Amino acid sequence: MQDPADLAFPEPDEAAKAVSARLFERIREEIRSAPDARIPFSRFMGMALYASGLGYYSAGSAKFGPEGDFVTAPETSALFARCLARQIAEVLPSTEGDRLEVGAGSGALCLGVLDELERMGTVPARYFILELSADLKERQQSLLRARLPHLADRVCWLSEWPEAPWDGVIVANELLDAMPIHRVLKAGREWREICVGEDGNGLFMDQREIVDPRVRDAVNVIDGAFPDLPEGYLTEINLASGDWVRSVGGFLGRGLVLIIDYGYPRAEYYLAERTAGTLMCYYRHRGHDDPLRWIGLQDITAHVDFTALAEAAVETELDVLGFTTQAQFLLGCGILDMATADDALEQARIAHQLRTLLMPGGMGESFKVLALGRGVEAPLTGFSMRDERFRL
Ligand SMILES: C[S@@+](CC[C@H](N)C(=O)[O-])C[C@H]1O[C@@H](n2cnc3c(N)ncnc32)[C@H](O)[C@@H]1O
Image (cartoon, rainbow, N blue to C red; front, side, top):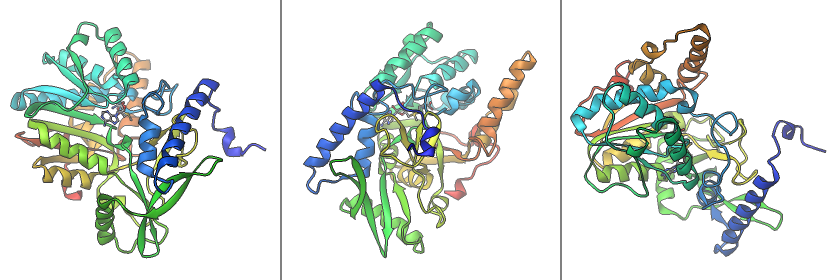
């Protein structure tokens, strides 16, 4: 009999199932050649999302929007990109340089930022995108050619970080939540690592001693700060996001980095009651917590520890310039002044978008904005309503 939970979970088509089966084979081969026939969860997640031509972000599924699996802020409303453009325009006179977007998804944010900068008379000579997925890079190119043909030539795709020193503004919206995380479990008094094995029927989760010294160090920080977490506590460690900040610190000359994502300061991330962590999977707008389901066809994501990002920034001598909720950031950038419409229908549409972007039940509180930088004058307009760096 079909599990009632599956009734709400649409069946992928045959082509999608074939991609998933090939990815499963590739992961299985890797598990079989691992010394203890187990791979770290982070490796599994990296392959599920990014394996060349087969991973969730690398293969051709819709991903974004109503036809896809989830909706991001730039997909929700053009007002989001317009607000970011205003924040970018504010700092450019002091930083000069270019703009760089990392992980550009469908290209909606780039489109909206360029459009608004043009309206403001500050259209840049170049807008760089660093995108891991060849499939998404093609989609970004088509979108820009179709919707902003006169500016499309100014967008350049990079395959690696620019050379140091690079001046300008970097934007990363919902990038760091899509990076592979380690999962760790408190078992008795010790912490163990979640890994993935294979038993002839399929993949399964297992646990083992933590061998990676960086994971061990990160666990020691959590354990030291929160010694009373209950036995069986399952959570995540995102080493890749700290590495990302350190890389940016390595090449940024003068400039601003805006990181927008869902997440918490560390003290709120590792709450005793958050016993199953924050890992979530999305398939056709259904959220669940089983990353082994339909491998490669669903998004896998985890919240961001913003304190870890601020610590990485300080390590690499970047200034922490602001931290606030998405709602306060957008209000500070003047979203309400931009939210005008000529007719009642458009007004209703915009009111709906504002609710999604700003309300606590939507993206307003769960999404945060962290500004890092070097040689940039604060205060920044996006943090003028409220700056909560003290929470980090
Ligand atoms: C959740 S999507 C967000 C897309 C877009 N920023 C938005 O808000 O709609 C994550 C994006 O980051 C890209 N990505 C993930 N890791 C990356 C990395 N290390 N470097 C560049 N892009 C990356 C993915 O391919 C995808 O385009």
